[in-house]
Amino acid sequence: MVDETQALPLHGELDGLRLYVSHACPFAHRVLIGLALTEAVHRLPVRVVEPVMGPQGWVLDPPDARTGATTLRDICGRAQPGFEGRATVPMLHDARADRILSRDSMRILRWIDRRFGRGADTSLFAPTLEPELGALSRFIAEAINHGVYDAGFATTQHAHDRAVERLFSALALLEKRLPPRPSWLFGDRLTVADIQLFTTLVRFDRVYHTLFKCNWRHAFEHPRLWALAQRLHGLPGVADTVRPEDIAQHYYRSLPTLNPSGIVPRGPELPWPARSGIAPQPTVPGRGALDTGGAAASPTRFSRSSTSQ
Image 1 (tube, rainbow, N blue to C red):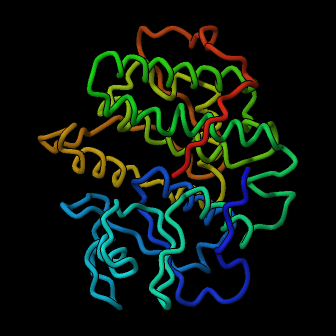
Image 2: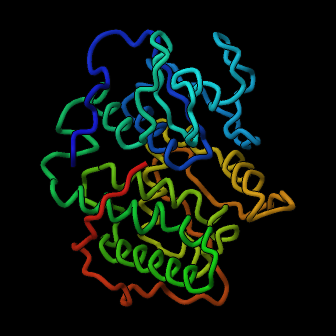
């Protein structure tokens, strides 16, 4: 993987730095998990935006104590006069210089891993696993993390069908890659690829299955992927980063083109462990076992196209 930590402070004081995140956003969620796993959550100031977006995007409530800003767009506008882009999370901001350091989740996660982690042996970016980790990370980003959005925001039947087929082929491919026993994507080594996968799986049955019409299967109908998600959820600090209500409120109330009524479904309720361990899998009447034989690619070959956010 390309070193994305250039220009981010690897040494020195953290005074003035602030990380803006949302528990609802899957890309910001990667960073929150990185903070939890490295225990940096106790060292880096974090500001959580409101789950439901307003007309100007992510909302700060209460307003920023220093500037009075009420939206993340206000923060971006102060740092970059004339700002016209999307004010996205995560965002690492230097308040002393009033400068945005990064709004790229993978770059910020790599910075957290290098700044607060315990070295190469436990690094989420596992340099000894390159280049396969880089290829798998890009595959997950393209086919799964962004794949659910390709399906949800498709404007033609053909585009939606293609996106759904690609998404579920990718999930089946990763299901086939994992052994029957609970495992990470690279065996005993937890990596950034597991975190990328987790942040989509944890949202899948609550929002993507219904709102984005990704209803070919539920996430929990992929038993090995579900076991991976349960295992990661059980790691110290990770459960605290998962806020199902924030996730539901954000997706169902912030996307009027997909859900004009703003009604938030009550379910489904899924069993997540409070600590390490595998919860029983929900069952779906009338559904057979997952067929992983239709995946279009070999379990160790992945697209190398670049995708990041």
